[in-house]
Amino acid sequence: MKELIQVVITINPEIESATVEFLQKFSPVSVSVEFGHEFTHCIKAFFEILPDNFYAEMQQYFRSLPGFGLDPGDYNIKIDQLKAADWENAWKDFYQPLAIGKSILILPEWLEVPPKNKRTVIKMNPGMAFGTGQHPSTRLCLEMAESLLKPDMSVLDAGCGSGVLAIYAAKCGCKPVVGLDIDPDTLPVAVHNTLINDLTNQVLWLAGEVNTINDQSFDLIFLNLTSEIIMKVAGKAINHLNNDGFCLFSGIIETDKSKITSFIADLGLEIVEIRENSGWIGIVSLKYA
Image (cartoon, rainbow, N blue to C red):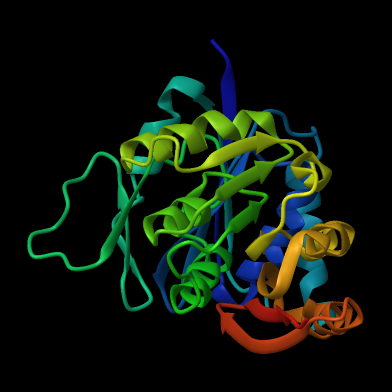
């Protein structure tokens, strides 16, 4: 049976965003953050393979942090083999209901809706996909979208992962809604999450890059990616953004804020809001006619 490698890193919250960014070089299947208290965060990452020198590279990374003005503090790295069949149980250990913004509740599929709940419930099963609302970058996107999404708006979620952003848009009455990801393995997870939210045929899921959507244009585009990928795909993505439409950027670490805001301005978009959460940045931009 296929196995995954589970890496659990307990760290000082000050270096959470930098550590998540560093882990991307090893091509994780998924990365999530468990927020313990003000002194420690727990990063849980899953990999299909890891290089033999992974532990040594992580140690070198932590030793290098003081040179960037960051305090590694006390940290712990634990590496385990995990059968793919146990993936869901690994998430259930810490994946709990999460209230976001003023009106959103992310609810694990295996839990019941709380009594007297008045929030918009998005049921999720993380599967092997990124973006279930637990990470600050996804929360920022949901919070920014909360006041922007209106019925009948057309929405593109580029880099959809688990589908949470596209599913929220559909729950707000947006249509059409398209979820796009270059990793075809994420789409079955997104489709499953659509079904458990009773949104059959309300989201179109596509595997591929931005040019997959041809000439279609949208009133709002989510780009919850990384700074590097945003700079590669945003130019193409905003060609599909309607005039007076919004592009929401997230997945940006705090140290990239200046670089990305300048990049967005160079695209001809106006920045109308910047939000921050735990060292991550979310940006709302507007495309004027």
